Image 1 (tube, rainbow, N blue to C red):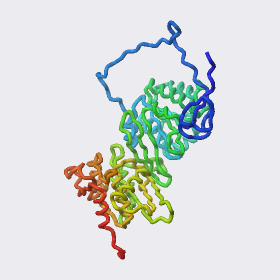
Image 2: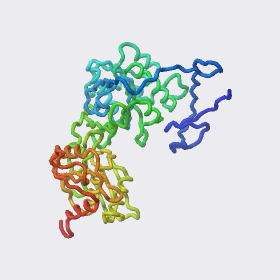
Image 3: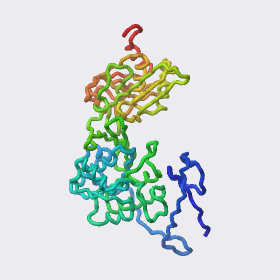
Image 4: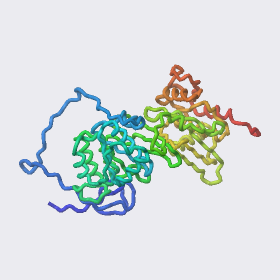
Length: 464
């Protein structure tokens, strides 16, 4: 048999090459290829002719009795909401976030809550010593919780220790990038080690029934570092987001085999750890200036939760040859599309203006339903018209200028009514007056109607 040559693996995306090169063709990262040893070929029972002999297993039909997986409720409502109602025994979760965002703080609070309820909880730290973890627990007032703590990075030792005594209900590995396995011939932190360590830990969780949470580092682009295959191996991927200038944090579900995706949980960072925010709409709308042009309240939906947030726009004459387009909290290409529609079908001239768009509070909005609120804020800033402070906006704008209906309109209206809003500007069709919100519904079918309505509120020249 011919001897295998060396392989080079990209430490950013996991692509494998048979020779070294300066740039990874898969992800475009420079100087990310590292030589790694190949895994040994799998050996097993062989039959006649030297061919591997497999094991015959039973096949089942789609019809049969099924039972819902039991849940382990952590006691932290926002965390349970994102996970789909609690942790499922034997499931594996991967949580990522920027350094210092509060991942370890949140997991320590979840561990303490479960341990105080009488369940066995193990927290394994590969980045901090046990003394550092104890200091965090003391600062949050959780030092009395019976959480079993260890500072270890060898996967085989961790699995052997977890097998002693009763099966733990929850195991936290902080973080997966620091783990290494003696069965993998590669340096700790490499793609091969991360993949091999994750496979061993996931195998333990599936066979023992313990819930496993893996903490993952993130890249400068905000993506979880390491090979994407780890995200495919786990049952749920959670992203912990937040801005340093804001005290609140958002836990967002990106993948969940046991619950809804794109669900969010909102927390506020305090001196005693993370506290739950049960009414995020009131938090995002706090302190808004109702007498300033260029601000519109968007009634959005994150997962199953309706959330109201303020969209701020500033349209100012430019002194540059190419106008600036700055966006925070929304899709840049989506803004370019809305600007093109307003110019083509709305009759506005924005080519000589800088455009700045911001989602107040630091929330990241991914819905096309925010098109109408963004367009209203842009027209308001350009014309100087002040939008009605008691109104909310939602609707998708097509390239033809038509305003299209969006889903879950009734839930958006009920949330707006609960917070004291009186009117909703929305697409034609969709929810009707019998949705139970009691709001005054104003419908628009085209952006020209929206532009005309806002322009009628603009102050005339010479008015203050």
